Image (cartoon, rainbow, N blue to C red; front, top):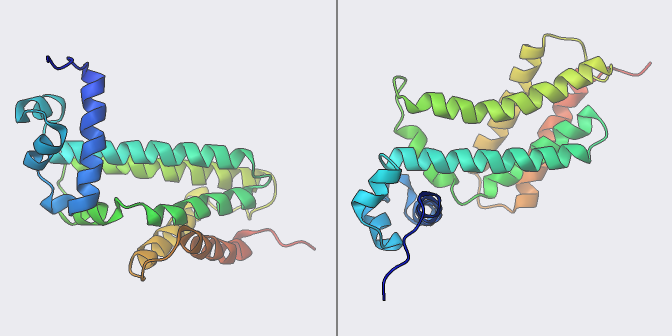
Length: 201
């Protein structure tokens, strides 16, 4: 029986699906293209035709994850009435992201990067998705008189630092549920909101 010839998009989808499972199971360091050949039943030449190396493949998975997260934010922001509620929604989603099984592989991958790494540009683009969403919410809050009229970049840095710190701390904790991770992130933002919200007279 002859095997159906797959289109380039179909092949990439299969490779990415198996690669994600592989990185979850083995982590970034131990996963190899040989393992991927076995799980996809594709030749190494076929894998390298679509992805130059393991790092490029992993970055594609990270980009996919970032796009999916961004879509979740957009969906949640539509149901949040005020900028404060929108920030809390973003915090909750970032907290839930601590539950993603890819995180250990992401942490391993981060340790392989140097300041000269070409991949830093791609990672910066992924981080920009979060930054743009937060900046937009903060700008709306300032315009509506809900947040103090401080420099927008300083406010963004404060919110991003708070959320990044919450995520880093959560990853050092014993395994928690998605609800617990979300609560830790939203509580951190609730405390920050007390400092940037315009006080009612």
